[in-house]
Image 1 (spheres, helix red, strand yellow):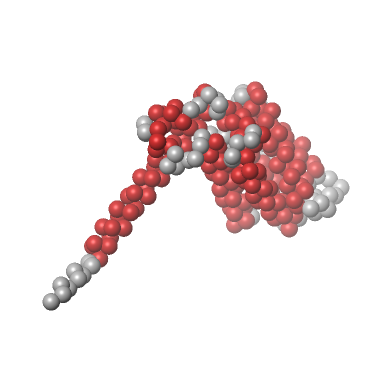
Image 2: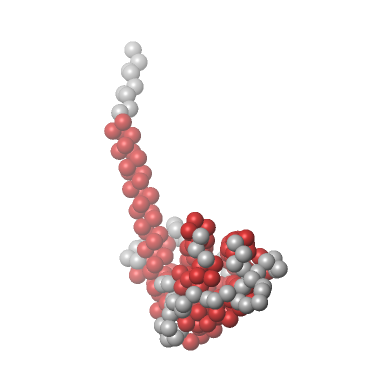
Amino acid sequence: MARRAKPIRPSDLSGSLSNSDRRQRRSADIRERLFRAALDLFAQKGFAETTVEDITEAADLGKGTFFNYFPSKDHILLAFGEMQLSKLEAAIEMARRTGEPMPEFLRSLGVRMTQEPTRNPAIIRALLQAYLSTTPVRAAMMDLQRRVHALHSQMIQLGQDRGEIRNDLPASEIANVFRQTIFGTLLIWSLYGDATLHSRIETAFNLLWSGLAPRGNSVPPLPAPLFRSGD
């Protein structure tokens, strides 16, 4: 007589799912440890001087573990770029939901996007190196920039639809100028690495706004500065 299959109890399923969840959490934790350790080392030693062994040692993991999560140390920079992209997506979605006026949103965006670890000049220099190099991640980095531009275009279009940004130029063209202004500000600041990042962005935005504001007899006033000079 064939033996009847043992019925599967709900507790058996929940135990299996819990084990799977634990593995996923552990995997995510290891990836995060590698990611954070790498960024810290890039900031301290520089990107070129940091080795995979340095990263795994700082994360207290075996060297071979690194390649289970990242094909190369260059891909850490790509993961960082994806993190920044997610922050931008969330900020734009918040602006849609809250109806935050575009001048305030654009001014605060620079601050949101340049918090740690972005506020470290070595990280910015490492990103620039990845964009300008011939490493395998360069194509992916360029694709990331295209996605950033698409989000910036959505942001500008939102302001145009509200009548808060000039509409005599395509949103994509204005988005390019906005992105180049912020990128250029980060580049210049990364050469100095001082405490003026936010004030530099503030100044750049104030000048940029005179060109972004709707065409008319006068430029709408800007909100009060977020930072004093030197912050």
